[in-house]
Length: 358
Ligand code: NAD
Ligand code: GLY
Image (cartoon, rainbow, N blue to C red; front, side, top):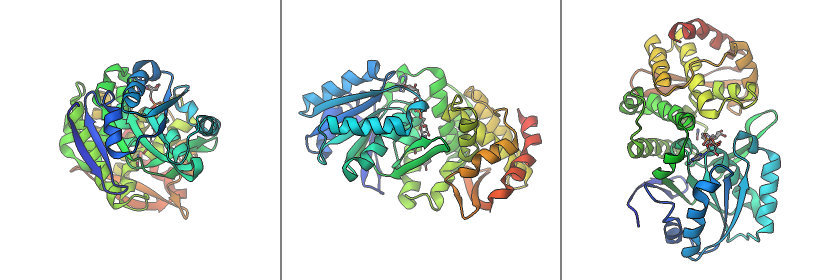
């Protein structure tokens, strides 16, 4: 078996294994923590030709019975229609409560397959086999599962935790640069909110020290989620860049990918915080520098009022109040709440500053 590092996630009590060649060992590794059963491997049409056969062969060699479902790639599949088809496929494949779903792919596959697992027969086991940097450092850990509604991102979902996460760093070798950069945006996020050293490393751009980066981010996330699984308190810091990011995704008709939108979202949100005297202006410049090092955007061409209007159905609005994330200069961030109706003015204040750092 290949070597790996283990990060334990206390909320849910599962392990994230990080190493190379882990998909070839998937069958053995899963059988160490789950009884042999029928597994539906869900993936997309980009990932399938690259990695699916390796996973199913390994599962079969360990005695698992396998079924597969291949969805079209991209955010366009994270909807109710694909979710319904996936549930029907679970039934057609004869999955019972003892069966399992394996999500092989990026965050889109992880989110929709996780939500199907959360709801099929009122919940069956699932595991995450992330194949993008973004999925490895963020979406495969922490149990947020969802699909999008016409009205907005991730509006239909559940908190439901995987039983195991296998991060095979070799899967990054087939990632196009732009998709690697999507993941870099979330890594920059972790650096800003929790780890100065990681942020400094990201300022240098490529190459990526995949093991260091994935392990560091997963440890940060496991720690935070361990203290606040349901996103009511501290976990909200992980949403840095996401309120504006989700608005950008929605306004662009999902043409702008999640990672690129979050990158621009961090730039907007930090410029706004700086302009409202909540953090130093130098942080806005540093974030722009990190984004540029990964060819990520620092703006998205939408005005503050468009962004604020698109954010009004955000899940993070509670009782008319919205949590804003304030990055501090030392690898730390604070959460403050403002009236949601004031969000447009808050963002507007940052527009001028943003144009200075672009
Ligand atoms: P994605 O799943 O769409 O993957 C990006 C593209 O890369 C797709 O075209 C996919 O086919 C392709 N791909 C995947 N792995 C590949 C590989 N190894 N080689 C070549 N191509 C590969 O997007 P993503 O950036 O991984 O995830 C974005 C999604 O994750 C969004 O829907 C976002 O909302 C969600 N997300 C969820 C959480 C969470 O906590 N649940 C956190 C962050 C993001
Ligand atoms: N991606 C943000 C979270 O998992 O809370």
